[in-house]
Length: 324
Image: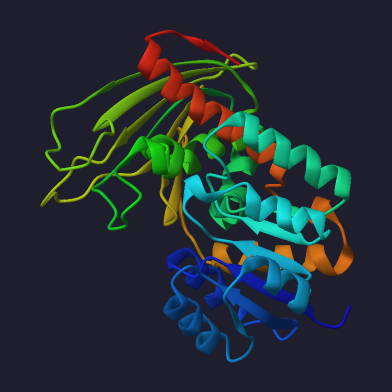
């Protein structure tokens, strides 16, 4: 395969994120762009410097015959798109969250594996060079517990402020941190999550304003993850993870830097590599080699993260500990 043929379904902000990386590669060919708002597809087509804008997904898949489809749509729009790709044995990258129910996600997972297509989910933080350093540090320093936070305001997209269309902040946004603790510490066995309202006054908004999730892992590791979308005119929050070890500490600041502290030294590392470029490079290489193992977040693994975040919502609404 000389060039990988790429098509996009959904041409908003996250599509621009991926396209800004793909245009750096000389082994990518753009064959199609589809969005329910044609002007956005036209914009991304111009950004790519090639390809064609389509007015129907199925037409694009049948005519353009992409090697991979980038699925960049709101969380409640998944299902038919993935199955259309799978039916045609087209590989795909799908942005998180990949679904708002485990039933749908598991159906997509199983169908994709049966069809033998390469899958990737947009957990970009798995490609951070500072996370690779963190894994190396943790090999020699036993972690005890971790606390983390993703606190900010409400993104300016119409679908974000309701559970029905976004799944809530844990599922749509802070899912990156929940994926990261799985990536670093293994599989969770239970989660309890409590949340509150009353801080955000906005028409049509039905999310919880902030929450705290307590997770127990198979290894015995425990975590508390804070989530909030209530800030306004705020000086800024320290978003990231703070890992407390028996003989040291790790302070990971979201996508920026990591600091390792021990009795004898403090080491700080800034992110050097562009993790988005690394993610999309891995995806293109995986398609060329037809090698799923090159993807750090395949659909099957991402389903476990989705399950954890959906369990947080279940715990909020039932008041119960959810066993995984």
